Length: 266
Image (cartoon, rainbow, N blue to C red; front, side):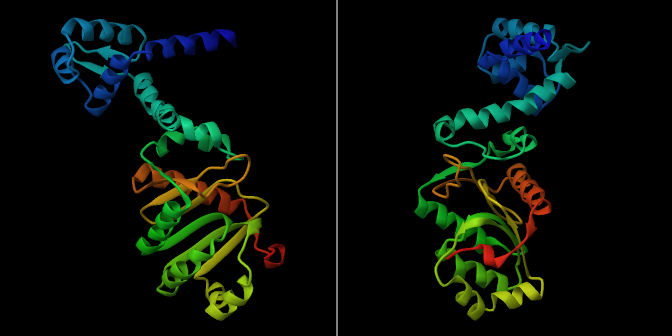
């Protein structure tokens, strides 16, 4: 097993160069490039680029064709796909000093690179504004995994649901819910919307990672000290980010239990 890690450490050594990483991503953008265009695009000398091309070729990350053009190998392309995860974590290292991935399955942590396009939003006022914006922009559906139900969000989401937007959500058994919630739900017609299938809901014992999404944009909020933290979030309308959030919601949906109103305490 030690030999395997030694091999991996050798590859990390090859990536310990900004210029070599830039070369890999230039080849990812447009496969098959010659030395001269690479040097021009990276504002480097031909000698520098040639030296790093040789290293990358010897490590098996790129290959040189007969016509003198360089391209990524399967291994090189795969390494490029793994780098965004490190990019996401390094971009937000201060955030992840206090936050973590909670009880999230490893397979979603391994895909964290899909979140690299997300913008970091900090402060409860700003996160609630973005939350409402996701509601407002929804035309087809709103999916959520919730640790609590902020009172300020009830009217905005009810308005969208009554306009025909599908609403599916997962709520923690220990969720913080506003006082008088059940009375308000009854008066608003919330339970009728459940009966006709416009709203579907499930329950989990606990929720650490909060997700909010519509059909085109998404937010994810990671836990702090073992509990959900809604004062900071990552948001994006990029496809890869949205796909991650949608997959995470679906995974939790199929692994959640029946909703029991009596488990919630106002």
